[in-house]
Length: 476
Image (cartoon, rainbow, N blue to C red; front, side, top):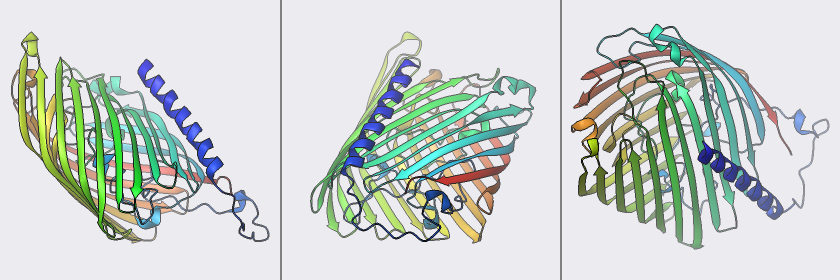
C-alpha cells in the first residue's frame, strides 16, 4: 500500500509539473476566433453526445496518439496505446468534465468455474466522474468509477463489497521532437465489473486476458511510462517501461486458490521511415515475472518491428524475433531451473470509419498466469467488430482464443489452459444523457494438470446496464 501511495504521488506531481511546463510553452493565439453574439462563454456550448461505448462512464481508450503525419503511431508493444475499437466519430479533442451513474444487472451460470454449482445474479450501481483536457502540447484524461455489487448466491455473500476503477492517461509534447506518455490504471473489482472477456494483442507487461478465474476480489495496477525522440527526418528512437501488480482476496471456499504476481518490463526501440506511413525498425525488451511461491521468469527479446498507417482509418503493426527465457522456481523448497530459446511474434490490424470499426490480431509471447498459473507461454488471437446500425444504436461482436502453457511445474505438475470466448452486445444512446447496453458472452475453458478446477469449465453471462451521463465544457 505504501508503494502504491508513493507511485500515485509521483504521478500527480509529474502531471502537475508537465502541465505547467507545457502551458508556458503554448503560444497565445495571434488572431482569436470571433465569438458569436450570445455564445461568448464556455457554458453556452453544447456538449457532444457521449460515445456509444461509454456506458460505464469511462471514455473509450481509442483516442489517437498525439502525433502528426510525420511520426508513426507507437505500437502497444513499445509503450503506445495500440489499436482501438472506437469509431472515428467517437474520437475528438475537447475539454470536458463528465459524470453520471450506471445501474446494471448480470447473471453468471458458473461463477466458481466448477463442474456443478449454482448460478449468481449480481446487481450493481456505479457512479462515475472523469475529466479530459487537450492543448497544443498536452492531452490527458482522468476518470474514476466506483460502486457496489450485491450477489444473490449465498456462497458469494462475502463478495458484496465495493469496486473501484481509476484510470489516468496523458501525452505530452515536451518539444517539437520529444513526446512523453504517462499512464496508470488501478482497479479493485469483483465479478462482472472487471471488464468482459477476450484476449487481445497487448504490450509487454500487460495482464493475461486468456484465463478465467473463479469469482474473487481482484486488485491490480498497471503503470506505463514511455518516451520517443524524433531525432531525424526519417528516424525515431524511444524507450518505455511498465509495472503490473496483481492480487487476489476473498476466494470462495472450494474454488481454486489463486496466486499473486508482479510483472516489470522495459523496452528500447529504433524506427526508420521506409516510406510515408510505413515505419520499420528493431527493439530490445526485458521482462521479469515473479509469483508465489518463490517463482520467477525472466525474458530477453530482440524483435523486428513494423507499423503501417495508411490513413486515420487503417493501422497495421507486426513484430517477430528470438526470445530467451529463464525460469526459477522452488516448489516445496526444491529448486527448479530451466531456460529456453524460442520465437516471439505477433500482428495486429485495425480499420475504422464514422460508423464501423474492425480490429484483429495474433500474438505469441511470455505472460503472467492470471492467478491460475505461474508464468506461461501465451498464444492468443482475437477479433472485434462494432457497427452503428442507425443513429443512436450500435452492435458489437467479439471472439477470441488463447492458449496458456505453464513454463514452471506450478502446483506440482505441468499444466495449461485454453480459453475460447465469444460475445455480442447492443448499445443504445437516447439523446446526450441516457444509455442502455445489453449483451451475452459464452466462455469455454479447458484445463490440463490443474487441481481444484473442473477439467472443462463453461460459463454463460447475460448483462444489462442503464446509465445517465452529463458533460460540462471546460475552459476556452
